[in-house]
Amino acid sequence: MKLIQRIGYYLGGFAIGLIILAFFFNKKKTSCSYGPQARVLKNINSKKIVYSEAIKINDSTLVKQILKKGEINFPKSNARKKPCGLYVIESNYNNNIITLTLQNCDSVVKLIDLQK
Image (cartoon, rainbow, N blue to C red):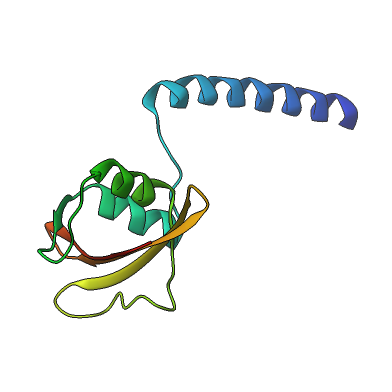
């Protein structure tokens, strides 16, 4: 068997495998969240959010949207703070920069500050 034929068979099998994987993973709604940004946001979104007394929130959907599409500012954050890590999440919403400051504890996330 020539080298070109071997490469052709390999690429054909590889393409069929990719199609099968895409079919199965599309139904499971899986995601590849391996980076630190995605892992922290996924962790925060999986917990109950508690608002501090100093913040008056009328629209919790704004907070949810920022938590899904925002970016964590790691230099301003203190993830190793005891007992709960402190994270600063920034997002652009209606051409305004909105900053959330959160405490990420074991079972809940507490919204400490919201700046528009």
